[in-house]
Length: 133
Image (cartoon, rainbow, N blue to C red; front, side, top):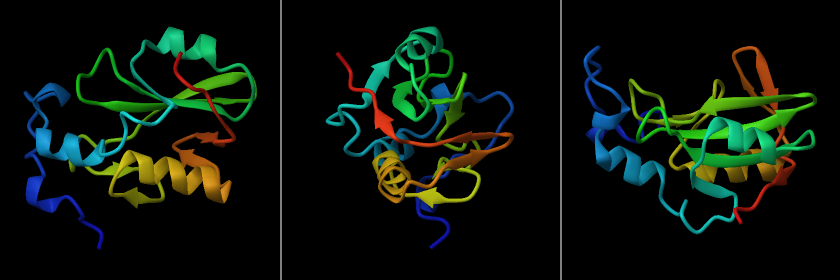
């Protein structure tokens, strides 16, 4: 199915923000996230950047700028990239090419299959999860 979260999809409104996104969506998307060692909770972009030293290093974090949004931060050679994982319009967990029920499903898919995540003009391989301290 292409619309896994459709019963809870928020209506897109220019006055809305991630802060107002339907919490049912966020809860479903984040199922199992808190127990993952690579989930860092609220972590700034700069702190994430300092932790990702080698190509393929990655972590998942909560955005400090967009409450409710979850971000994949990963190093691709000399650059750290940051990818929003929850589509603001549909509430779905997604990359450019795939949709997933949860963020854990997304990470498992790309980590186990060793496929790079392609999003816009970036490419991130999930080779080494960085555990929270």
